[in-house]
Image 1 (cartoon, rainbow, N blue to C red):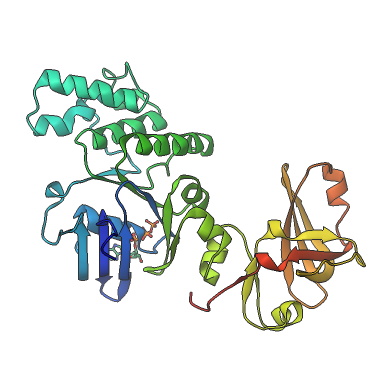
Image 2 (image 1 turned 180 degrees about the vertical axis):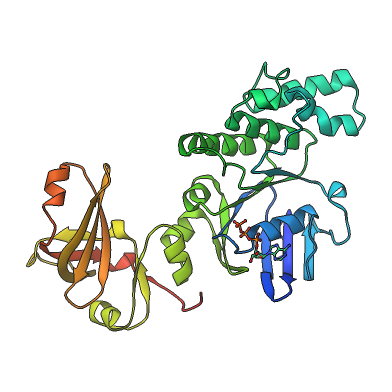
Length: 347
Ligand code: ATP
């Protein structure tokens, strides 16, 4: 243990209860220096409350939070080496972009020439050079969020907290900003803690993520770990789409009733009677629904043994007419056993 680095943030047995509501319940989590770490979960699962306790806007009911090895209980927000970026930007509307970005330096009494130099460097970092003289109202949503980011980064916090910062942007801009945010994080090299309910966003940007459900962390891991090896039903269902197979159907397919999941893209549709390779699982059924999604087609297959499985195939050669004609067709579903993930009942 001694060669483990001191975490940037350590939650030890942290709970935050509001009356009966356990917003955060016994959270134990280490986030390392320089990580892009995401708190992912549905609305109300405790992500924002966890972030607010790191920022100092809220206090745990019990447990402790350490920043770089130092307990932060009782420290006001401005004495913690963190900055926060919110979804609604929270820019000062009467100030110019340059004044907004330089605000943190002004209250630290940094001289004007020094301030101007740093504001310029920050606006370059967020790819908004020459915008210093504009008012926030003269910017697009994506540009405002970059100003908010520059304003938060200019005081060189050791940790940046981001609460759904891209939530107000349209899909295209959000995807572009995801790539930019990740690049900026790598450039400045500090720890980012990012809150989102969007699983695709979490998988795209994070070094590691924690999946929250009902105030508790269900699983912590890299995006590939979480996607490829979900350990609970909740994680398998919330991160991407998964088929959950249990009970009699599981017994019929793998010889044990233990619940397991398999991703729709791992299952192949074949003809009834096709040979099944060793180490593969199979089930017969009938195609019940077909959804043509352009690049992909999603099939819902009603199984002869009861239940249904979702299968996704790429439309490499097939046209929409061909895939739609597959409705009602009897099929054999085949997938490698290696893609089965046994799940714990938790969650
Ligand atoms: P969202 O994505 O919607 O922001 P979240 O995962 O960030 O959700 P939290 O905002 O942390 O969730 O809320 C967790 C739970 O705590 C919710 O049930 C919420 O209603 C409750 N809660 C949060 N703040 C308070 C408060 N000040 N008073 C009472 N209940 C609260």
